Length: 68
Image 1 (tube, rainbow, N blue to C red):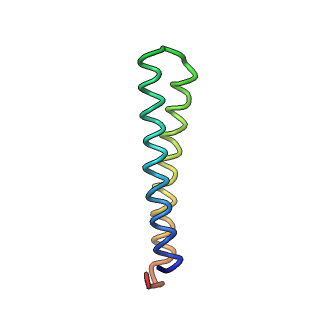
Image 2 (cartoon, rainbow, N blue to C red):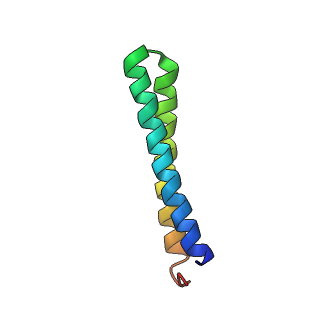
Image 3 (tube, rainbow, N blue to C red):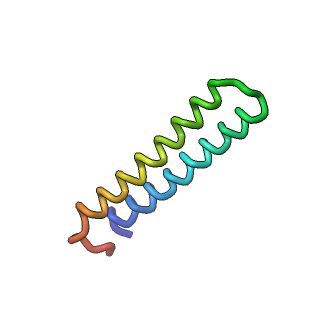
């Protein structure tokens, strides 16, 4: 596995973790109504979106490098 392929895999897993954390925080907010959970959920969503943007940027930058 090349460094490019590993990097893309790692970013994809990080996006899933960020959105999973945001979902967990929003569910906690719905249960307990603590505003800090809403803040954590927003930060998780922002992190997930930033990681998606980063993944697209890296794919465009490394388009000439093979996956092998």
